[in-house]
Image (cartoon, rainbow, N blue to C red; front, side):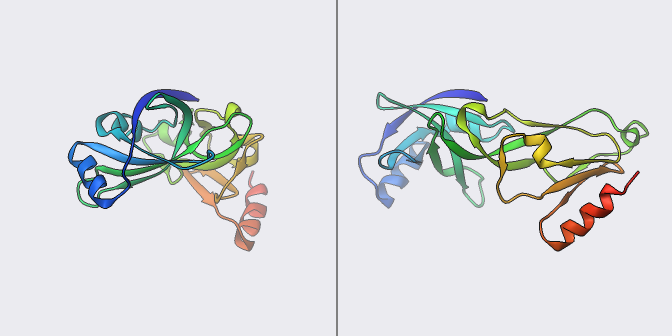
Amino acid sequence: MKSFDIKGELRKEISKKNVSELRAKEKVPCVLYGGKENIHFSLEEVMLNKLVFTPHVYFLNLDIDGKKTKAIIKDIQFHPTTDRVIHVDMVEATEGKPIIVSLPVEVAGQSIGIEKGGKLNRSIRYLKIKGIVDALPEKIVVDVTVGQLYHYGKLLGDFGLVDSPVAFLVKNNMITDITGGDMAVELKEKLFSLP
């Protein structure tokens, strides 16, 4: 997985006034969870935007006042009207320890329908998975051949799914997800009988 080096500044004060002052200076308040204690710090908004407004997922090599930590973005809060990043929660990424992350799904290949002028409609752009930090891939690649049924287990290998559909179907130029429950079992049985 790609990594990104970024420097942060430890927050000495944790108050609404302090947060407002940080945002006025174009800094974003952040919290790092997962270590011995939660760390409150701030990052430059310009540098953070390079991480947030991209389809890629990065490991962050944080340098907070000289203390180096490896982390991943867990949650981002945006301003409701300006879409500025107003707060970020991060989780410390410890080697050998499982972590939950949303990985982008990349579509590869060309289906017959697309070659004839059709469009590919994607309802799934990210999959939330759980896996060991050292072994996480950058993305999940799906070959879009008409009529193929993909099970997440086959795509992800050793990684586990978190709050995601059990399978999806690539048919008629559309990736359709199959959510859990009795209906999913019925639908899967029907899909397995497709030619």
